[in-house]
Image (cartoon, rainbow, N blue to C red; front, side, top):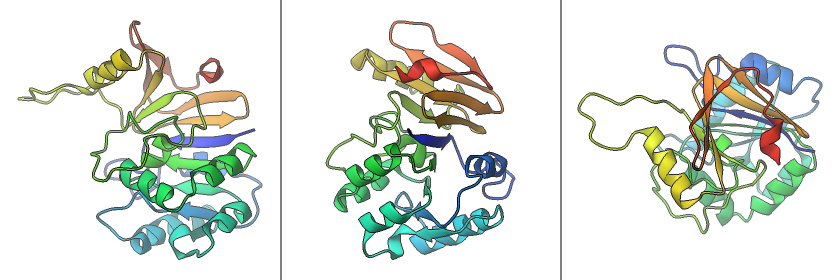
Length: 236
């Protein structure tokens, strides 16, 4: 049974990297022994080495060690041997494209569904969905497919907000997600604001963090979901 921690974001404005998720990550990984595997493939404007440095430091501070995927020659073997898997944010299209290039989608999915803990933030949360079609990212590369890991049966929109900026003439985030549902009426979308996460343990799913999430269903009014809510009904 899958064990997932899906974070909207890694860092709140004005705070050190990964500050707000640390208590949640520490609780999620409690009792896990051995090294985790960090996948930095969403990085674009900074190097994998730079990403590795800041993420391994943050995890070391809560008592967990990581190996970074980009140093590993046999990546499928590394997936099999990892104690947990962490996927960082960045660009979802770059992340998915690089995983396809290395033929890793199936290996990752099978290992995670077999029970290895998976945590991802931003692009890493998008990767857990059936597709990356509700990412906020620009398609700077073209993956072979938009199909992602399909670890959950609904879509996430990380960094969700309902702001409309002064002078903005284009669509809001809400309008974009409503467009998605017009053409994909069988799908569900969870708008996950910064500082919030989804925690899946087998057939139980909870919303945690600060604030309210928004659930989008085709032909229905947007629903506000309070932190602490049991969302297990979304798994069917």
